[in-house]
Figure 1 (cartoon, rainbow, N blue to C red):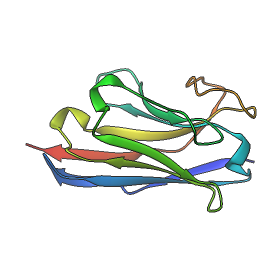
Figure 2: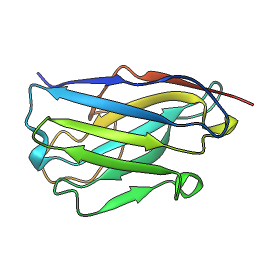
Figure 3: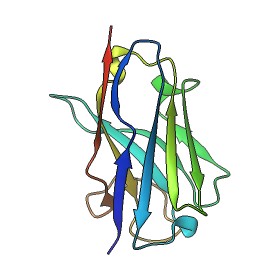
Figure 4: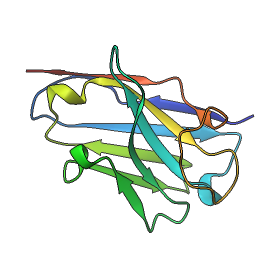
Length: 124
């Protein structure tokens, strides 16, 4: 059974940084794309960033480009989201995601594997 465990969330002042981690168990990540999504109160879950299985291609939500960086360490079975220059509008619960099948892109489907989420709070 695949499990994703996020960590690294917390409270930070605007302009600060956080690094989220997502450790996977029950699966070797090297053949799977990985992604991060977020959901703020009263809003729908939205895509933030993804990285393909090889790490060669990354995708970002426009509003986080230049501030957030997704990376992966397949040897540690872990994906990261480095978040810099945080803004109050970045506050949300951040979820790690991986598709059910190898080499598939991240689409954020209900049938994917999801972590339990980690809270990011940004004070102004």
